[in-house]
Length: 186
Image (cartoon, rainbow, N blue to C red; front, side, top):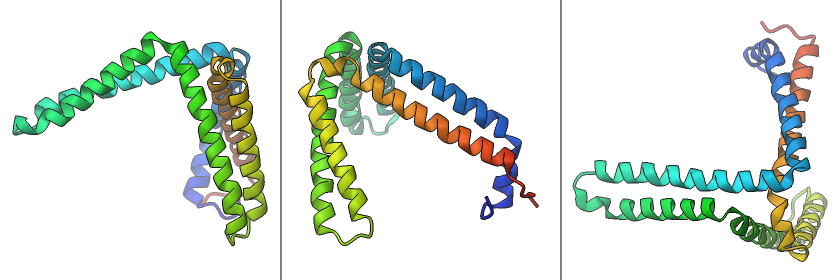
């Protein structure tokens, strides 16, 4: 931590216990999300639907605050689209989880293939890592697609759990590094 701004270092040291607690909490939540990936997938999809409903409501409120009212037509349509989409997602979370998982599989396959191609045509110093990233991403997409539609019941929850675990460990490492830092914040 030799190159850290002293103000930031001081804040890190003062809040390291909170960062450690946050990290541990995220690791626990991530582990639970993986262990109960079916339920965390459902929760995530319902959350997405509720978020769309909230966005639709705000879009609708904004529409009727616009002057002149003739300009609000697009915002009213967007509001209705968000709300109807959100209600549909909340009403049918399983079918939407399965559909979103299929979308993720295609996303991973296409982005993996693009990374592979880019690793061969680009002149970047990290071409090898880009190729490995592309191969793993492509393989992940193929594996998800191969297990689809069953994978739609657990993939989203598992991915969110893995992300929470890695984020949690990042906070834990940061907190421990800040606590153990021998530097003085001036």
